[in-house]
Length: 206
Length: 227
Image (cartoon, each protein chain N blue to C red):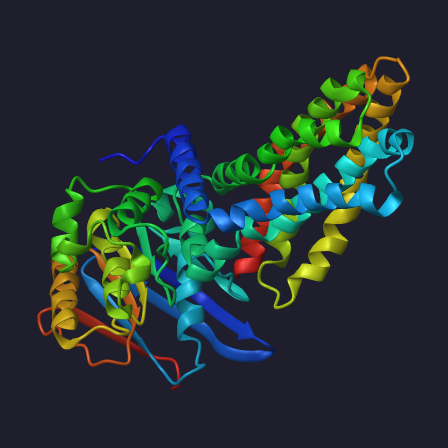
């Protein structure tokens, strides 16, 4: 199988500091890439470059063999990005937030109640996000993965403020996504145990 | 399921922003209160001479509208920037300029439209020449959307800066001046009994120019600010 997501000679410079250079990656359907490294080693920068939010100093990111800036909407339709911020509005309810997520992406035919149930927020559908705890907000942010159809999940510390049970829940969800031919790129300070999946590791401190 | 059509996405985002504005009514009232207060303070400061007030009424209303519009600019993208939804909009499969236009339209509906609605009352209070009412409203109707559209470019450029407020004013104010000049001139010529077609046509041209160019510029500026 050919690689869906590739990088060619990626170089990232931030504040005159070389974070990484000549980075070549290739990810096939069903693979997960764990990006590791010290604080400030460029993990977030790499993830943002892969989404197209940031531009690399040199090199390019390819999706199905074409540069992501040329592919445009067909690439963005396939990307789910979970960054440091949850990307949800405090003054909207959980359901309203999910509707917005679906409207901006490619919606999956799933009822929003089912989606909330999958992330254990069913009782909170009509609650304002402002009233949720940090972990609940994170779960709502991750519900983005359930309601939209995207094959590439890029996640920056998705487990921040999650409890153990939720971490297991989302790891199962990641495994299902990989089994269905999806790709995941993520950073995490937590130990990831997915014995059945094709796990690659990239250490940016090395 | 297919993703929403472009117009559906536009209306969805517009409705979302209006809903958010309704839930933050205090913020919504801020520019309107400013507008009303500045205008009511003028007669106290310059004296209640009806002739003087009616002569400077249009100018006062327009300067106050311009400052009120600038005051509210930052809120176009601020909360979306802080909670990360702006990032998600940038990554949306929908074209960013269309989404930007939806946000700016919502912003005008909650910050520009109220000025238009309250302006007749304030014009009456200042004793503006009654022949000039129609043209005053027309200039506000055509002019305030231009202010929001131009302002959105400035906000997009400065959103990532720690103290962007001052730069925003310096950046945007010079671009507001032509709108102010043509609006004031339109009201002046009508008050002296001449038709203001030329000035109003110019303002309409400004509006179409801003409608077509500013969302593209704002989208590009946002991409730059977010990287």
